[in-house]
Image (cartoon, rainbow, N blue to C red; front, top):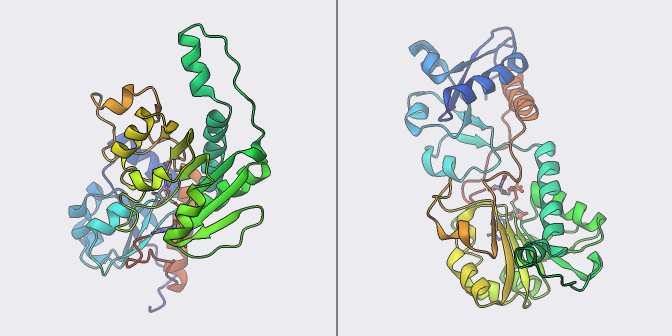
Length: 320
Ligand code: NAP
C-alpha cells in the first residue's frame, strides 16, 4: 500500500442504518478523534467524496451505501460481530472489526452477573415467590459449579479470567488449543462434548459462522448434566432454541438467559418471552462503548492515512 500524505485531511464516510439521532451521536464522538480528517454521514457525501473514499467507518451499513463508494478498500466496523458485513460486502473489501478491551470488560461483567443469577438459583426463587413458597435450596460454592465458555476470543478470555477469579471451576472451548491460567481448555468437536459433560452453566460467546450455526443443538445440550443452565451472549442462531425449549420443558435443563436471537428485536408474540425457564434480554450484555469505539476506529484510520498501515482484517475463510 502506497504511503499517503499525512498533511492532506481526508473525508471519512460514516455509513449506518441507525436512526438519524444515533448517527449524529456517532458523528459527534468520531469528529474530534479523527481531526484533522473529517467524518461525514453518507447522506452528506458529495460525489467527489464517494469517488475518493478508500475506507469508511461503518455500523450496520446498507449494502447500497457501501456499493456507492467505488474505490473502497476497507471498512472499520464499530461492532464486534461481523457476520452481516461478511454476508453483504464484496470479497475485495477488508473488514476490520471492533476489538475493544472495554467491551471485553463489559461482557465479562455480564457473564459474571448472569452466572451468579443462575448459580444462586434466582430464577427458582422468583418462581417460588409467585407461589408464596418458603423453600431453601442447597448452596453450592463457586468451585463446585462448572462454567463452560463456548468461545475463547477477546470476550471469552476476559470472561473466563473473571469467572476464574471469582472461584468458579472455569472451562473454555475454542477452535484451536489454548493455554489460559485458571481455565481448563478444550478444542475440537470431541472437546466440546467433554466440556459440556462437566458444565453446569454453559456460556455461548461464539461468532455466527457456517460452522457455528446450529452448533448447540439437542445432541450437544444432551451432554450437559441434568439441571444444567445456559447463557447465550454470542449470536442467536448458534443455539437451536427449539432444542433448548424441549430440554427445559422436559426438566433436563433448568434455565436459560438469552440476549441474542435469530430475529431481533424478538417479536412480541414469540413464545420465548413467556417461557418461565427463559430470561429474555434485549441484546444488552455488551453494548459498544461510544467513546472507546470512536477512539479505536479513529486510531485505525489515522494509522492508514499517515503510514498506509492496514488494520487486521476478519478472516473471510474462517468467518470471524
Ligand atoms: P473473537 O475474538 O473472534 O473470538 C471468537 C472465538 O470463537 C475464538 O475463541 C474462536 O476460536 C471461537 N470459534 C469460532 N468458531 C469456532 C468453531 N467453529 N469452533 C470452535 N470455536 C470457534 O470474538 P469475540 O470478540 O470474543 O466475540 C464473540 C462474539 O460475541 C462476536 O462474534 C459477537 O457475535 C458476539 N458479541 C455479542 C455482544 C452482545 O452484546 N451480546 C457484544 C459483542 C459481541 P479460536 O480462538 O480457536 O480462533
